[in-house]
Length: 134
View 1 (cartoon, rainbow, N blue to C red):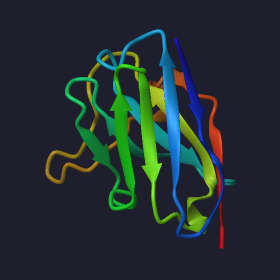
View 2 (cartoon, rainbow, N blue to C red):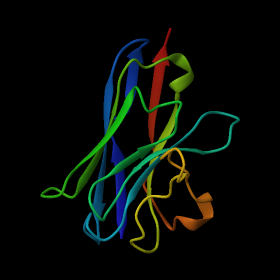
View 3 (tube, rainbow, N blue to C red):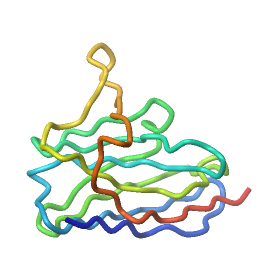
């Protein structure tokens, strides 16, 4: 099993980037794909997820109006489209998959993405750097 994250780069504030997570070793019907990021000196934080079951997406509140997750099952690739980027979005971005195909975790009352602890994701991409200049 291998996940490869790509697509990062340098962008000006207000710009957009699309990250890709190419999956090897299982299909997107088998496991959900989660996106995380880690800024310097900060903990890794979950951003959103696309469910293996039906392609439903879930997001954290602070990105749901700007970030969109999608997938191309024919290519076994998941995308993270990021719009209206701000300097505080500067981080290394990772994709991750759980051990089993249990869909995305979310808060039942709000539908907001609620990631598991990072230790519960055995499969990680190598990370791709996103830098947003002001």
